[in-house]
Length: 219
View: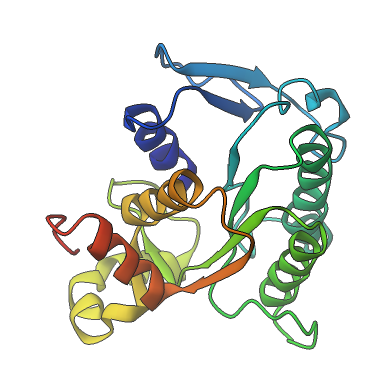
């Protein structure tokens, strides 16, 4: 969801020369800037070393919803895949920046009883330890899909149904998927030379989008 918007925004961004999209299946789109790389096993990204060479930044949106897979698979996708991809990117493009789609409540202490929070926190810690030139951790709250889709569970169906009221009552607990994607790409494009980590909570992400795209309708 977020990755799709990030891809489209990056392709349209005047400061982006080439976009390397890595996934398990073809995207079905054509663009002069787009380079597609198919890769099946994200537990081993060694084969991506050449594709990740010479990159300025990565926008990492790979993830899965809690309850859709087993706990072991949730950790594998959330933590192991992130660490493995970061390992190869760091080796191939040591000066690249990294924008990571984490989540609200990510727990870097590892003490949370919520698996999603623990695993996102573990992944964040690993990225910080990897010593990227610049890493930005995005912690969105509820991500509004914008476009119609089949919701993954009852909670998401409920949130989509009450979204108009929820957005008015708790504006800093929601973020549009396209706005989140814009922020992730903008950080990658505009801050590649800034050293050190940047942690953005949902309120910070909304503020960033508003400052960079003041004419965007908040929704």
